[in-house]
Length: 304
Image 1 (tube, helix red, strand yellow):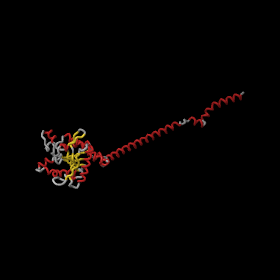
Image 2 (cartoon, rainbow, N blue to C red):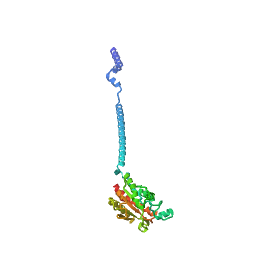
Image 3 (cartoon, helix red, strand yellow):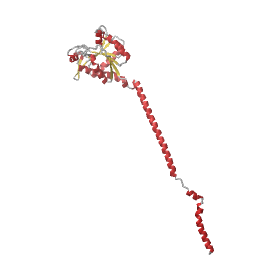
Image 4 (cartoon, one colour):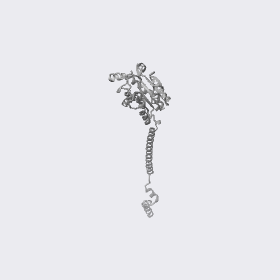
C-alpha cells in the first residue's frame, strides 16, 4: 500500500515539474522568438523598385525635355540659316522690280480730261507717274516687290533749263546710283506711246485693254540679254490676253537713243503702256496682265 502511495506521489510531482523543465529546452526558445514574415522582405524590395523606377522615369523625362530643347534650338538655327541662305526659302528672296519713268509727264487724254476737264498728252499733275501705286499693288498681288525711282524727270529738266531729248542722259546717274546700291531682277522704264486708239486698244472677252510694246535699244553690249527678257514677257502676256503685246521693237540708227540706259543692266526693258487715247480702266487691266506675265515668265522659273 505504501509503495502505491509513493508511486502516485512521484507521478504527481513529475507532472508538476514538467512545465518548468520544458521551459528550459532550446527548441522552445526558438519557437518563442517571433519569426520575420517573408512579406516584410518583399515589401521592402518593392519599395526599393518603386524608388528606382521613379528615378529612372525622372531621368527619362529630363532626357526627353533636353532632346526637345535641343530640337527647338536646331530648328531655330535651321530657320536662321534659311533666312541667310535665300536658296533654301524662296519666300525670303522676293522677285524685285525697279520702276522708272523717264518721260514722267506723258499722259492719257481721257484720264487728264476726267481730272481737269482738258485733253492733254503731257500734264504736270495727271500723268504716267501717277500709275506707280497701281502698278505696285498689282505686282505685289503676284509676289513681286516693287521699288520706284521716284524722280519727276521732266519737271527737273524744266527747272534746269534742259529739253526733252536730254531725258535719258538726265535720269542716267539716278538709275546708275540705285543699281549700285541694290540689285533687281527686272528694271522697267514705263512710257506712253504716241500712237492712236486703233493701234493701242484691244477688246478681249468683252473687256478693253491698253496694248503694250516693248522697246529695246540695239546699240549696246546688253542688247541680246535685254531682248531675251522682252521676248519672254511679251510671249507670256499674249498667252494671257492674245495680242495684248504688239511685240518687241529694236531701235538703232539716227534720231533714236539706241540704248535707253539698258546698257546699265542686262535685266532692263522699256514698255510703252498704251497710247494717248487709253482710259484708266484699260490701263488698269493691262497692268494686271503685266504682273501676271512677270510672275509666269520669271518668278516660277526663279524658284525652281
